[in-house]
Amino acid sequence: MKIILGSQSIYRKKILEEMGFDFEVMVSGIDEKAIRFKDPKELVAALAKAKADAIKPNIFEEAILITSDQVVVWEKEIREKPENEEEARRFLKSYGSSPVETVTAVAVSNLATGETRIEVDIAKIYFSPFSENEISDIIADGEVFCLAGGFSIDGERWEGHVQRVEGARDSVMGLPKEVTKRLIEEVI
Image (cartoon, rainbow, N blue to C red):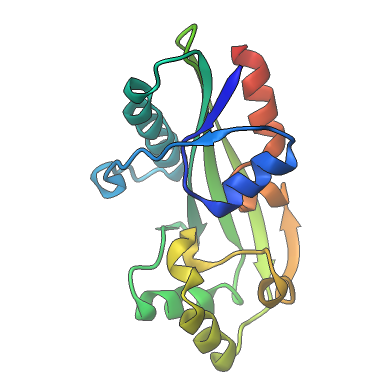
């Protein structure tokens, strides 16, 4: 059955490719800021579902649709993509003082049967502190503004600071392979 990834994330594309899937990409275009919940699990599940609901009317064939959303939680504060340099700097400075969690929802829908499954996965990352120069370099690169919480664990600049990851690395990257595979099997 055809697979559609409802995301423009380069990391999610990379993970699905690593899983061996051929797929197309469609983007929902929803206003993510219009959907708000205080509970991060509830928030990401609602966003993943909303993305799927927005894309479904544009698909006219049998397919499996995969959507996902992620937020970062640091000391009970929900963090999405940094909105400006000041916020990115604050985020990066804080990660050396206590661990940060990624809260990722995956929604998988079988468009032939109408069945949808949603699951939330959490991973915890422990970073060593970033220097002021490293923070400035990371912000100047601009990638932080495309990443939930303003960080990644992929790439040399990040890996040097990752002390430990509790949970799946691919979950931190935005699409937990094990969860995605299981949900696909459940809806087929």
